[in-house]
Image (cartoon, rainbow, N blue to C red; front, side):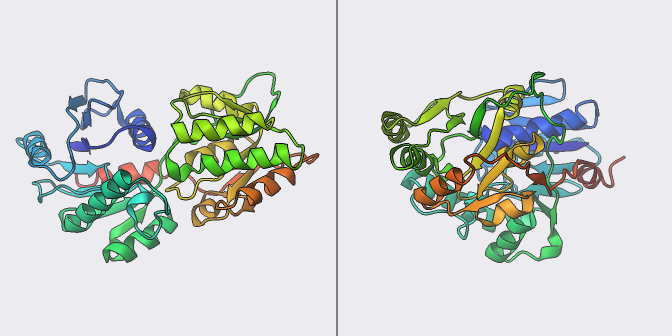
Length: 342
């Protein structure tokens, strides 16, 4: 039996990872998913619980009960943090996929509450690191920072990214009627504020008005103000809101360029999917980009002017599609997760 522990995971990238893994193993009767109620997933091998913090006694109790009576079981923790205690399992694997937990990669300016949450998670990753047999991460970039911060031997950390490599639905017309797209939520490190400032600069100083599609939805007040300022300057910015996976594919298929100003990413699925859809890409000149795609234009993500200049440089230029250089290792991941199981 393989138990997948996502009791403290939810939303955003975690939901994407869970959906992807579930889609690959859902027909295997020897897999059971332990999810919290915020995860939108149903199936005969899915159990839902109230969201459980990773360091609580309740998490230990749930895991112990689910592992009890199973002759041989491996445990796969999807929420960055190993179990608070060593559990009776054949092998324990922990998937670390939140770059913001790493203090060396955490950008300045995060809200104090978020900074406190991330620091607490980092503390428990360190405290419980001996309760897992192996770690999995998504890129060599993350592995390097992870091993350095927590003093974990590199041989205990494997780079095993997994994601849907199938290109999403592209409109049959093939018409790319949107100039730029940025598929992302509104977390501070996603850097929408400087992106909107860049569109203000393009309109006000360069008299250039490319369209920009974003997918924010519930927009925070500070971003709403910045967006209003940009629109007053004539910027053409459209918020499509939170989209389904297929709708994201359609939006990318309509877009000529992806602009990706995020300050830190573990893998940057929006960046990868843009390359899969044949978009040209402008991306932040930071460590994660180079391990995800090739053939893209770089800019300084901390400068709205630099973002504006990179966008302006594409004027009257046809995009050359970026190329994905990272590939899903789902088959290898499953082989490791199911090792030594009957």
